[in-house]
Image (cartoon, rainbow, N blue to C red; front, side, top):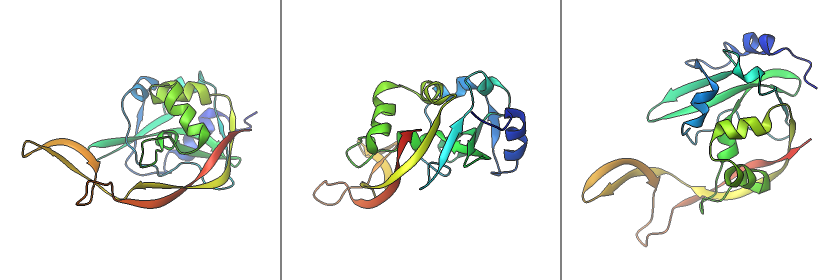
Length: 175
């Protein structure tokens, strides 16, 4: 059970990350970015507020950059008000598979971040073992018929293989 009131958590996180704006739960049904700045870290325990609490103004924030948006939700991380990046739940390897069983479930069972947040609401999760996976090293503009499409795709080598680099993140478990 969360010991922090949602309104207190909102106030505590207002200056946590610069250049962010408040949004509504409906905005979470949009496509978010793959940027993860405030995801699970080794040893974290993260508690999410009830679905009703997330309807309050200030509980969901967005940081816009370039062509994407990172959606952040107010949570309690290790007993302290914090923000959580919803894109952590969509973390994928080079084969576009979710990293770890929990993320695979989040990607296969839910079609957007609003559905994922509704699953998380009112629950507590812990970060477990560190997982190592191959991820695309960089993304480049897709070019079709000699023109940029506006879509970013993984960079490939001369043989058409995606150029990768090892990445790590913790596995996630419901507490």
